[in-house]
Length: 495
Image 1 (tube, rainbow, N blue to C red):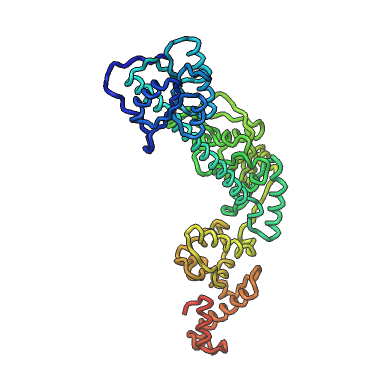
Image 2: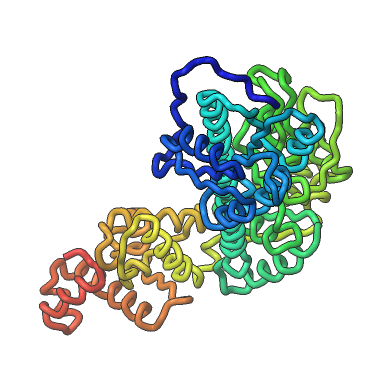
């Protein structure tokens, strides 16, 4: 492509790097020393010029200098200008290549553009400001290409960093939800672990039953991450949390305009989880129409978004949970029998926390460490009296309630020292006091020192209640009053 002469006499301001710094470096190769000198004078004000009259010298300069643009004469004696530019491209692939030519032979210029990827050719004799403008435009193209490459390198590094972070995060999630991280030591929990391990490697539907707060969602995730689908999506939806239409949209998706507010198409959780696992929490709360649609997914793997007449096939493992007695719901006609048996290929029943008292101390310390990390605090654990309160309490909301209670205790403790009984909620403290006054000892799972402290606490409370004073209590118990006071302080009993 020929450069058009520019008639204006004013010189063209040279190109500058966006980031500032040293001027661009230009290599000029021309066997005519006078022409080379003229080119250096025309461009030397704005750029650092490297000149050479031989192709071999030009190639040597390219090896050691950060050349941004190459101007080569078409008629070099030892090597044609096009051949030189092809060699130059191997050494400095990003450098812009321009050809100086006294004739416009179409064949040679076509070869220059196609083989040497010449940016443009400049006709001899050249006009100073036309040459300056051509060089400026070429260096602007060089700057843009360099920035794009740097951006690609940066994006490549960021993508690799994200890939590593995602892999690390996946490993962390898999570790966090590994079934061996579920806390429990009694026979009931051992049966749960055994079932999780066996069912995880299959694609069978699983129904997890148990009271609210027993950890049904944790077990569902453990099954997914221990199975063959752990590299695919795990999606979860609480079926009791949404009204019918919104629940249907969340699970199956919808087309734009399917209902008021549906402004765009939306994928449902079954489609998002294709190849992975869908967890339906509290499936017993679904209405009959929804139960029919869930049955179709389990039988045929088919879904149909709201507002669409087309069905789609998905490959999803379904894990469901319920705190209801679904068999009783079936008997009363509120839950479909065929769906019940489709969901309950394997049933895993989770025991309430009141039936696994031996796990309370371990769970409490597990939640304590998590609360310390989250609140960026440090502490020393629980006093014996505080742990005694936790073990005696019935935990109607199960593990979830224990987790919340421990977090509350850390919050009110100020992060200093031990968690005492006074830092626990009143219902939990009152349960322990009432049990002590009744002589209702729960020693299962307690260490000997904890059981001894519980007995001491009971005797002190009873002695004070009977005598009406600490002095009378100390006489009844046969210990000095000062010793009684120290003991009460250690046991977190009010003075």
